[in-house]
Image (cartoon, rainbow over all chains, first blue to last red; front, side, top):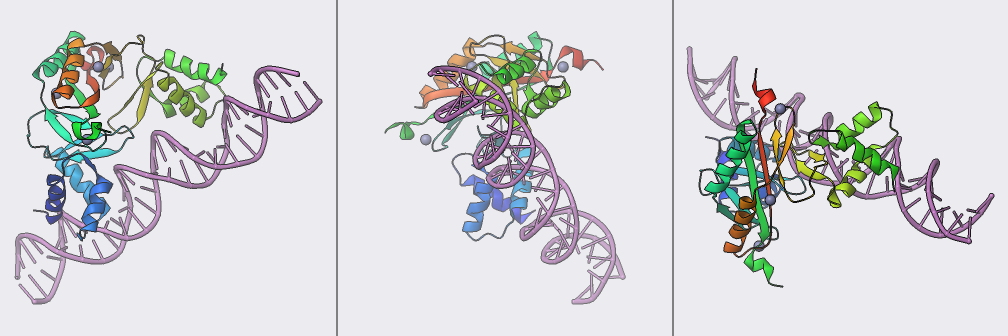
Length: 125
Length: 125
DNA sequence: GCGACTTTGACAATCGTTTTCATTCTTGTC
DNA sequence: GACAAGAATGAAAACGATTGTCAAAGTCGC
Ligand SMILES: [Zn+2]
Ligand SMILES: [Zn+2]
Ligand SMILES: [Zn+2]
Ligand SMILES: [Zn+2]
Protein backbone atom coordinates (compact mmCIF):
# COMPACT_ATOMS: atom_id res chain seq x y z
CA UNK A 1 0.00 0.00 0.00
CA UNK A 2 1.86 2.99 1.27
CA UNK A 3 5.31 3.42 -0.23
CA UNK A 4 6.39 5.26 2.92
CA UNK A 5 5.42 2.35 5.05
CA UNK A 6 7.76 0.19 3.03
CA UNK A 7 10.55 2.72 3.36
CA UNK A 8 10.34 2.73 7.13
CA UNK A 9 9.91 -1.01 7.28
CA UNK A 10 13.05 -1.36 5.22
CA UNK A 11 15.04 0.96 7.46
CA UNK A 12 14.14 -1.20 10.43
CA UNK A 13 14.75 -4.45 8.60
CA UNK A 14 18.35 -3.49 7.97
CA UNK A 15 18.99 -2.46 11.57
CA UNK A 16 20.37 -4.76 14.22
CA UNK A 17 19.16 -2.97 17.32
CA UNK A 18 16.40 -0.67 18.46
CA UNK A 19 16.33 2.73 16.78
CA UNK A 20 14.57 5.98 17.50
CA UNK A 21 12.21 7.76 15.13
CA UNK A 22 14.55 10.71 14.79
CA UNK A 23 17.41 8.37 14.12
CA UNK A 24 15.53 6.56 11.37
CA UNK A 25 14.38 9.83 9.89
CA UNK A 26 17.93 11.14 9.77
CA UNK A 27 19.34 8.08 8.05
CA UNK A 28 16.50 7.97 5.55
CA UNK A 29 17.11 11.58 4.63
CA UNK A 30 20.83 10.91 4.47
CA UNK A 31 20.29 8.24 1.86
CA UNK A 32 18.11 10.55 -0.18
CA UNK A 33 14.63 9.35 0.71
CA UNK A 34 12.06 12.12 0.55
CA UNK A 35 10.07 11.66 3.71
CA UNK A 36 8.97 13.83 6.60
CA UNK A 37 9.55 13.29 10.27
CA UNK A 38 5.83 13.29 10.93
CA UNK A 39 5.33 10.45 8.50
CA UNK A 40 8.11 8.42 10.05
CA UNK A 41 6.35 8.78 13.40
CA UNK A 42 3.03 7.82 11.86
CA UNK A 43 4.39 4.76 10.13
CA UNK A 44 6.22 3.59 13.21
CA UNK A 45 3.05 3.94 15.20
CA UNK A 46 1.09 1.95 12.63
CA UNK A 47 3.73 -0.75 12.43
CA UNK A 48 3.81 -0.98 16.19
CA UNK A 49 0.05 -1.27 16.45
CA UNK A 50 -0.06 -3.97 13.82
CA UNK A 51 2.51 -5.89 15.82
CA UNK A 52 5.10 -5.88 13.07
CA UNK A 53 7.45 -3.79 15.12
CA UNK A 54 8.38 -3.80 18.80
CA UNK A 55 8.70 -0.58 20.74
CA UNK A 56 10.26 0.17 24.08
CA UNK A 57 11.42 3.18 26.02
CA UNK A 58 15.02 3.91 26.78
CA UNK A 59 16.16 5.16 30.16
CA UNK A 60 15.92 8.72 28.97
CA UNK A 61 12.38 8.36 27.77
CA UNK A 62 12.95 8.02 24.06
CA UNK A 63 10.83 5.53 22.15
CA UNK A 64 12.83 3.07 20.09
CA UNK A 65 11.66 0.57 17.54
CA UNK A 66 12.79 -2.73 16.12
CA UNK A 67 11.52 -5.23 13.56
CA UNK A 68 11.91 -8.50 15.42
CA UNK A 69 12.27 -11.81 13.64
CA UNK A 70 9.54 -13.60 15.50
CA UNK A 71 6.01 -12.36 15.81
CA UNK A 72 5.37 -14.35 18.95
CA UNK A 73 5.46 -12.80 22.38
CA UNK A 74 9.03 -12.36 23.50
CA UNK A 75 11.42 -10.07 25.34
CA UNK A 76 14.82 -8.51 24.67
CA UNK A 77 18.37 -8.61 25.86
CA UNK A 78 19.84 -5.29 24.80
CA UNK A 79 23.46 -4.08 24.83
CA UNK A 80 23.63 -0.71 26.55
CA UNK A 81 26.51 0.42 24.38
CA UNK A 82 26.07 -0.80 20.83
CA UNK A 83 22.39 -1.67 20.94
CA UNK A 84 22.89 -5.24 19.79
CA UNK A 85 19.69 -7.08 20.65
CA UNK A 86 18.86 -10.70 21.24
CA UNK A 87 15.26 -11.88 21.30
CA UNK A 88 14.63 -14.13 24.27
CA UNK A 89 11.74 -16.21 25.51
CA UNK A 90 10.96 -17.23 29.05
CA UNK A 91 7.92 -19.39 29.53
CA UNK A 92 8.58 -19.49 33.26
CA UNK A 93 8.47 -15.72 33.48
CA UNK A 94 5.23 -15.61 31.55
CA UNK A 95 3.64 -18.03 33.96
CA UNK A 96 5.08 -16.27 36.98
CA UNK A 97 3.74 -12.87 35.93
CA UNK A 98 0.31 -14.30 35.26
CA UNK A 99 0.28 -16.13 38.58
CA UNK A 100 1.36 -13.08 40.55
CA UNK A 101 -1.47 -11.09 39.01
CA UNK A 102 -4.14 -13.68 39.72
CA UNK A 103 -2.84 -14.28 43.22
CA UNK A 104 -3.62 -10.65 44.05
CA UNK A 105 -6.96 -10.62 42.32
CA UNK A 106 -5.84 -8.70 39.24
CA UNK A 107 -7.28 -9.38 35.79
CA UNK A 108 -6.11 -8.51 32.26
CA UNK A 109 -2.58 -9.06 33.42
CA UNK A 110 0.23 -7.92 31.14
CA UNK A 111 3.90 -7.34 31.77
CA UNK A 112 7.02 -5.67 30.52
CA UNK A 113 10.36 -7.42 30.83
CA UNK A 114 13.61 -6.21 29.35
CA UNK A 115 17.16 -7.24 30.09
CA UNK A 116 20.09 -4.88 29.65
CA UNK A 117 23.81 -5.53 29.72
CA UNK A 118 27.10 -5.02 27.98
CA UNK A 119 27.64 -7.44 25.13
CA UNK A 120 30.80 -9.44 24.56
CA UNK A 121 32.15 -7.12 21.85
CA UNK A 122 31.64 -4.02 23.95
CA UNK A 123 32.91 -5.55 27.18
CA UNK A 124 36.60 -5.68 26.21
CA UNK A 125 38.41 -2.41 27.08
CA UNK B 1 18.57 18.17 56.47
CA UNK B 2 16.43 19.78 53.82
CA UNK B 3 12.89 20.54 54.88
CA UNK B 4 11.82 20.25 51.25
CA UNK B 5 13.13 16.74 51.10
CA UNK B 6 10.89 15.86 54.00
CA UNK B 7 7.90 17.48 52.34
CA UNK B 8 8.28 15.42 49.20
CA UNK B 9 9.06 12.29 51.17
CA UNK B 10 5.86 12.82 53.10
CA UNK B 11 3.78 13.32 49.99
CA UNK B 12 5.01 9.97 48.72
CA UNK B 13 4.60 8.24 52.06
CA UNK B 14 0.90 9.01 52.10
CA UNK B 15 0.34 7.82 48.55
CA UNK B 16 -0.69 4.32 47.69
CA UNK B 17 0.47 4.18 44.09
CA UNK B 18 3.04 5.73 41.80
CA UNK B 19 2.73 9.48 41.29
CA UNK B 20 4.23 11.94 38.85
CA UNK B 21 6.34 14.96 39.78
CA UNK B 22 3.74 17.35 38.45
CA UNK B 23 1.06 15.51 40.34
CA UNK B 24 2.97 15.72 43.60
CA UNK B 25 3.77 19.37 43.00
CA UNK B 26 0.11 20.17 42.40
CA UNK B 27 -1.10 18.47 45.53
CA UNK B 28 1.62 20.05 47.65
CA UNK B 29 0.65 23.48 46.40
CA UNK B 30 -3.00 22.63 46.93
CA UNK B 31 -2.37 21.93 50.58
CA UNK B 32 -0.49 25.19 50.97
CA UNK B 33 3.13 24.05 50.88
CA UNK B 34 5.46 26.65 49.44
CA UNK B 35 7.63 24.73 47.05
CA UNK B 36 8.68 25.05 43.43
CA UNK B 37 8.31 22.49 40.69
CA UNK B 38 12.05 22.49 40.08
CA UNK B 39 12.66 21.55 43.69
CA UNK B 40 10.15 18.73 43.58
CA UNK B 41 12.02 17.33 40.59
CA UNK B 42 15.34 17.72 42.37
CA UNK B 43 14.16 16.02 45.53
CA UNK B 44 12.57 13.16 43.63
CA UNK B 45 15.80 12.65 41.75
CA UNK B 46 17.81 12.64 44.96
CA UNK B 47 15.39 10.25 46.67
CA UNK B 48 15.51 7.96 43.66
CA UNK B 49 19.29 7.96 43.55
CA UNK B 50 19.52 7.19 47.24
CA UNK B 51 17.23 4.23 46.69
CA UNK B 52 14.53 5.53 49.00
CA UNK B 53 12.10 5.89 46.16
CA UNK B 54 11.33 3.74 43.13
CA UNK B 55 10.79 5.28 39.73
CA UNK B 56 9.30 3.88 36.56
CA UNK B 57 7.93 5.18 33.30
CA UNK B 58 4.31 5.02 32.34
CA UNK B 59 3.18 4.06 28.86
CA UNK B 60 3.01 7.68 27.88
CA UNK B 61 6.55 8.41 28.98
CA UNK B 62 5.91 10.14 32.27
CA UNK B 63 8.18 9.33 35.19
CA UNK B 64 6.32 8.26 38.29
CA UNK B 65 7.63 7.73 41.81
CA UNK B 66 6.72 5.66 44.85
CA UNK B 67 8.12 5.16 48.33
CA UNK B 68 8.15 1.39 48.61
CA UNK B 69 8.05 -0.40 51.94
CA UNK B 70 11.02 -2.65 51.31
CA UNK B 71 14.41 -1.42 50.27
CA UNK B 72 15.36 -4.73 48.73
CA UNK B 73 15.25 -5.36 45.02
CA UNK B 74 11.66 -5.99 43.94
CA UNK B 75 9.13 -5.37 41.22
CA UNK B 76 5.58 -4.08 41.01
CA UNK B 77 2.10 -5.20 40.20
CA UNK B 78 0.23 -2.04 39.28
CA UNK B 79 -3.48 -1.46 38.70
CA UNK B 80 -3.99 0.33 35.41
CA UNK B 81 -7.02 2.18 36.68
CA UNK B 82 -6.58 3.21 40.29
CA UNK B 83 -2.81 2.83 40.55
CA UNK B 84 -2.96 0.48 43.50
CA UNK B 85 0.44 -1.17 43.71
CA UNK B 86 1.69 -4.40 45.20
CA UNK B 87 5.38 -5.03 45.70
CA UNK B 88 6.34 -8.47 44.45
CA UNK B 89 9.47 -10.58 44.50
CA UNK B 90 10.48 -13.29 42.11
CA UNK B 91 13.78 -15.00 42.82
CA UNK B 92 13.25 -17.23 39.80
CA UNK B 93 12.96 -14.23 37.51
CA UNK B 94 16.11 -12.70 38.96
CA UNK B 95 18.03 -15.86 38.23
CA UNK B 96 16.50 -16.24 34.80
CA UNK B 97 17.43 -12.72 33.73
CA UNK B 98 20.97 -13.14 34.97
CA UNK B 99 21.32 -16.49 33.24
CA UNK B 100 19.98 -15.19 29.93
CA UNK B 101 22.52 -12.40 30.01
CA UNK B 102 25.48 -14.62 30.78
CA UNK B 103 24.38 -17.20 28.25
CA UNK B 104 24.78 -14.60 25.51
CA UNK B 105 28.04 -13.22 26.83
CA UNK B 106 26.61 -10.07 28.37
CA UNK B 107 27.98 -8.53 31.55
CA UNK B 108 26.60 -5.97 34.02
CA UNK B 109 23.21 -7.48 33.48
CA UNK B 110 20.21 -5.59 34.84
CA UNK B 111 16.53 -5.86 34.11
CA UNK B 112 13.19 -4.15 34.32
CA UNK B 113 10.10 -6.14 35.15
CA UNK B 114 6.68 -4.65 35.81
CA UNK B 115 3.29 -6.30 35.87
CA UNK B 116 0.10 -4.44 35.04
CA UNK B 117 -3.51 -5.41 35.47
CA UNK B 118 -6.90 -4.39 36.77
CA UNK B 119 -7.25 -4.87 40.50
CA UNK B 120 -10.19 -6.54 42.22
CA UNK B 121 -11.87 -3.28 43.21
CA UNK B 122 -11.64 -1.83 39.73
CA UNK B 123 -12.64 -5.03 37.98
CA UNK B 124 -16.29 -5.03 39.12
CA UNK B 125 -18.54 -2.80 37.00
C1' DG C 1 26.61 41.19 61.93
C1' DC C 2 29.32 39.09 58.10
C1' DG C 3 31.23 36.41 54.41
C1' DA C 4 31.15 31.71 52.19
C1' DC C 5 28.45 28.27 50.85
C1' DT C 6 24.06 25.84 49.85
C1' DT C 7 19.25 25.68 48.61
C1' DT C 8 15.46 27.44 46.34
C1' DG C 9 12.20 28.61 42.60
C1' DA C 10 10.52 31.68 38.73
C1' DC C 11 11.47 31.57 34.24
C1' DA C 12 13.53 30.22 29.96
C1' DA C 13 15.26 26.59 27.23
C1' DT C 14 15.34 21.74 25.51
C1' DC C 15 13.67 17.96 23.10
C1' DG C 16 10.87 14.10 21.70
C1' DT C 17 6.40 13.77 20.11
C1' DT C 18 1.76 15.27 18.44
C1' DT C 19 -1.43 18.62 16.02
C1' DT C 20 -2.63 21.48 12.51
C1' DC C 21 -3.65 22.36 8.01
C1' DA C 22 -2.63 23.40 3.36
C1' DT C 23 -0.69 20.83 -0.48
C1' DT C 24 -0.08 16.65 -2.98
C1' DC C 25 -1.30 12.02 -4.37
C1' DT C 26 -5.03 8.24 -5.25
C1' DT C 27 -8.99 6.39 -6.78
C1' DG C 28 -13.45 6.00 -8.86
C1' DT C 29 -16.56 8.02 -12.27
C1' DC C 30 -17.89 10.15 -16.35
C1' DG D 1 -8.38 12.53 -20.20
C1' DA D 2 -10.92 15.52 -16.73
C1' DC D 3 -12.69 15.93 -12.25
C1' DA D 4 -14.47 15.60 -7.51
C1' DA D 5 -13.87 13.23 -2.97
C1' DG D 6 -11.03 11.24 0.10
C1' DA D 7 -6.46 9.73 1.96
C1' DA D 8 -1.64 10.56 2.67
C1' DT D 9 2.07 13.75 3.32
C1' DG D 10 5.14 17.06 5.62
C1' DA D 11 6.46 21.87 7.20
C1' DA D 12 5.68 24.40 10.81
C1' DA D 13 3.46 25.35 15.20
C1' DA D 14 1.98 23.50 19.53
C1' DC D 15 2.64 20.54 23.48
C1' DG D 16 4.29 18.72 27.79
C1' DA D 17 7.57 16.76 30.73
C1' DT D 18 11.94 17.68 32.20
C1' DT D 19 16.25 20.36 32.79
C1' DG D 20 19.19 24.56 32.90
C1' DT D 21 19.94 29.32 34.47
C1' DC D 22 20.73 32.57 37.77
C1' DA D 23 19.56 35.88 41.15
C1' DA D 24 17.34 35.96 45.63
C1' DA D 25 16.83 33.71 50.13
C1' DG D 26 18.43 30.73 53.73
C1' DT D 27 22.22 28.46 56.62
C1' DC D 28 26.41 28.11 59.17
C1' DG D 29 30.63 29.22 61.50
C1' DC D 30 32.84 33.08 63.20
ZN1 LIG E 1 27.41 -4.12 22.42
ZN1 LIG F 1 6.47 -12.03 28.42
ZN1 LIG G 1 -7.49 -0.58 40.86
ZN1 LIG H 1 14.39 -8.16 39.62
